[in-house]
Length: 228
Image (cartoon, rainbow, N blue to C red):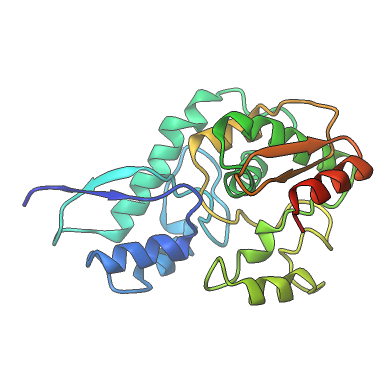
């Protein structure tokens, strides 16, 4: 049987990877998601989280053999690819950040900033908030547990829920896990952020980034670009 490509898109959650594999006929629905919640079944050169491999399942195009797909082998390949592409390039670690912190930050950056070139700047702003004990205020984290990422009504409800552990508007620190599986540019941005005078940012309708130094500047951009 000829191998065929299967692409895991950057930012996809475990549930989206599971859905795509099931749609392509490689697995029964839920099979990948169930295994991805058993990190102890897998080996890695780096520490794996205890509860879920969310964030560690490297997005890439993998060649697979239809009819001969093994879910456990595929997840192991993703973990190995994370080592090859990213972890192995940082033999001395990440300074005062752990790999887990870098992966969680990377998973937010891939959702927050579409342009790879701007990702280090956004990473710098978010790490600065963390280091100064500000709440992150990253709305993407409140989408993480939604069955449909773009379900606006459910999302707005989550934004007001102080009991949601992923609500970074209302809760301090990083979210409890990654919120998806970041690509290389987002991981590298998290590992090597750009420092700047900025504390805030927003995107206009075209997806362009507008960082700002103060609440006043941020609010002026909101009005100018009609972002609320």
